Amino acid sequence: MAALLISVAPLVAIAADEKPAAGAAKTVVKRVDVEEFDKLRANKQNVILDVRTESEFKAGHIPGAVNIDFNAPDFDAKVARLDKNKTYLVHCAAGGRSAKASKKLEGAGFKEIYDLAPGFKGWEKAGKAVEK
Image 1 (spheres, helix red, strand yellow):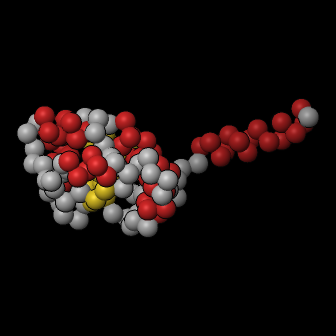
Image 2: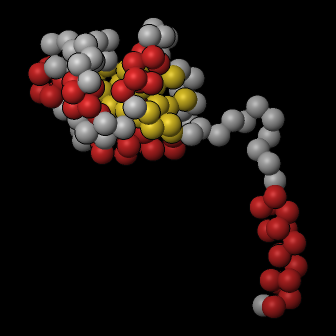
């Protein structure tokens, strides 16, 4: 057993030092404030993803947002149909569900994800536009 560990140890050390292949960018979820989110929203190529429930969404949402309920049983299936190369601006009511949803998107290979840290409540509190 000791001989096996000694022979594998150099391989583990080499693997730990390896850098990602050129062009293989690692996805990082960036938590942003209301002002940064609003700036990102100005680019109409970016997708605003509201992960609240349908009733929360209907009560008021960020203009142009797409609603996919994080707690719905078909969340993963709906997300799988999205274009992974687009930039996603994710939010929920207060930041909890969007953080979890963003991690799922990251794990699924989405390239660029921004999470609105204070959520829709923070958006409203800042006096930003709301659609019903």
